[in-house]
Amino acid sequence: MSNKPSIPQGTRDFGPEVVRKRQYIFNTIRSVFELYGFQPLETPAMENLETLMGKYGEEGDKLIFKILNNGLNDPKNQEKSRAGFEKVMEGKNSKDLTERALKYDLTIPFARYVAMNHGQLTFPFKRYQIQPVWRADRPQRGRYREFYQCDADVVGSKSLLNEVELVNIYNEVFTQLGLSGYELRINSRKILAALAEFCGGAEKMIDITIAIDKLDKIGLDKVKEELTQRGLNDEQISTIEKYLLINGSNEEKLNQIEQLLGHLEIGKLGIEELKYVVGNSQLTTDHADSRQPDKVGNSPLILDFTLARGLNYYTGIIFEAKGPATVKMGSIGGGGRYDDLTGLFGVPNIPGVGISFGVDRICDVLEELNLFPEDVYTGTQVLFFNMGAQESARAFNAMQLLRKQGVRCELYHESAKMDKQFKYAEKKNIGFIVIIGSTEIQNNTGVVKNLKTGTQQTVALADLNNKLFI
RNA sequence: GAGGUUGUAGCUCAGUUGGUUAGAGCGCUAGAUUGUGGUUCUAGAGGUCGAGGGUUCGAAACCCUUCAUCCUCCCCA
Image (cartoon, rainbow, N blue to C red; front, top):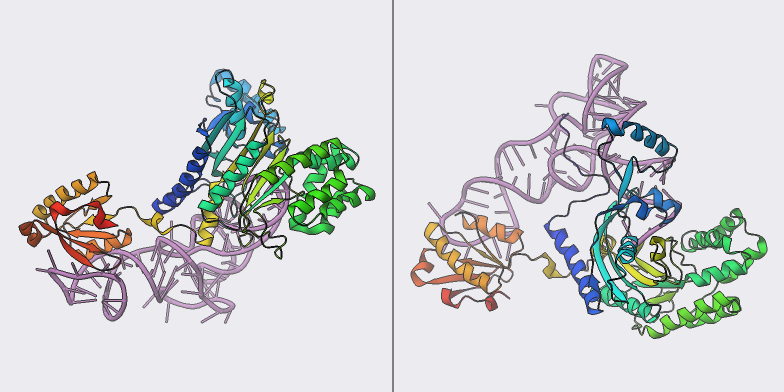
């Protein structure tokens, strides 16, 4: 009966080393967000269920973690509880059973916040948010039930300059993380809408996008099969095929899409958006496109008309960031423009655009590619050996002086054999040790040893300073 | 929600058609070595074989149930 302790499925503990790696990513993203003028925001772990339901599509609703109400067994609530349970058994939601839920992403809570505070905010409001979110998904590679998102959103501005900035944020972050070879795929919902219209009906848009989004995975023939299953006729499918065969550099793709969908009003709008964003992003060009490996020299920003993205509130430009093609991992970031997100909460006409970084997946990718810098592994810089009562008292004084200079130090917790203290330093990846024993006490000195090189020198305690430990 | 994989020491894993006391490497502890680590050598500790039930003279192995895990689909970060 004495079960081993455990944690819920899809959640993880993070040990010291992993936390350091994650903080390295968090800090990189945060500093870039700040660099671009975004301000921090935090919202509660839980939201009212009502706030979240219906915002992420049918599938999304199923993946929301719901929180059971308290006091269900209270005699005065029992009747309601039973009725609520019946409703849930029918597949409906019941406030009598659950009225709160863990947040599913950061965008909807942000929209809720903006709707509640739009009177006080200065627009355009640029906020970033770094917090965990929860999804009741089945865990697998790169998929967790609790994971962090890092979002940056701009609300209250229709300018495409925002999209251009967000593209550059992606580029800056991934470049700083050493993730060259990442891809930032971009499309516009308006293009997808135009395709649907051209194929005879806006109501077909979801069917079409779900199918063509899979092109990468299942190939053209299977996509056509799926389109047939979803009720598209041969003529429509042949149009979609033309659409899917669009190929070449971003410029070439734009020309081809113009020929195909440029005659439609919404298509024209989408093309203009993409032209603006692609044309103004000014990214460096030392990246390769995994779908066209022969064309080295493309920008990491890649036009991809098959990109759909599930979240149904997007209306304009959409983004999806992927790691280098060599790493098998889903998207490591995504985002897009939404014209009227706060409208869902009764405050219309506040357009917005935002992006998100998936830290947990980025961490997995950096791990796989060995891209963490050497110094993320270093915590303590200097270990003072404990050579006895008097000796350690002297060491403690010296250590405190060093700490005042910002050097991260510790004193071994008890007097022990040097062998043991050396091994402790080694395991904690501490680069330097300082030995203050009886000889050193007499001379008022300490022995400073660099464990990486093995060299050591005797230094007057008064001369101990941070420059010795670099 | 559907399908599959694996579960043996702290970690990574062996374990033959079911057969005595379940093994290895790494790690851990101690010693060689009482002021100089990483190397080497020696010794030692450490297991309800995921849990429960069944088949059998006998189960880590075969069957059932259950839990956990990882992976695939759906969808996504």
